[in-house]
Image (cartoon, rainbow, N blue to C red):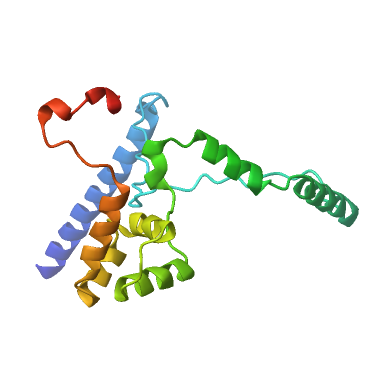
Length: 184
């Protein structure tokens, strides 16, 4: 009985295998290949880079420069630079000519060390006021330097105020004395 069961199992396996191979053969005979237009296109590979693929194309150089050509280019460049030397004095004069009184704040009006020394001497001593001291007082007014001097010498602000009172014209006390045409 065992032999009979084994023979039947082998027969079933043989039939199954024959059907399987015959189907493959029949499919090949009767099935037409899909035309290329109906095939699904392949998906492009996903690029995870933020920038994407580099498309750099190096520049093509037909022939490298020789030493003589390099020297000629450098010599020409040096000659161009020698011919162009800016004239700073002319530029400064042009800037002064274009400057108006409203634009004076853009230019530095600093004091030299000698001027600073004169201001310090004048404010620390009881010296007489000269025109030079008056001009220096005008330069110092409204700067951080005056604030620092006032911290060191409390009486310095009084001296600067007296100098400015001498220089600046008196403001009219009454409205009738004020004439707008003086300022227009």
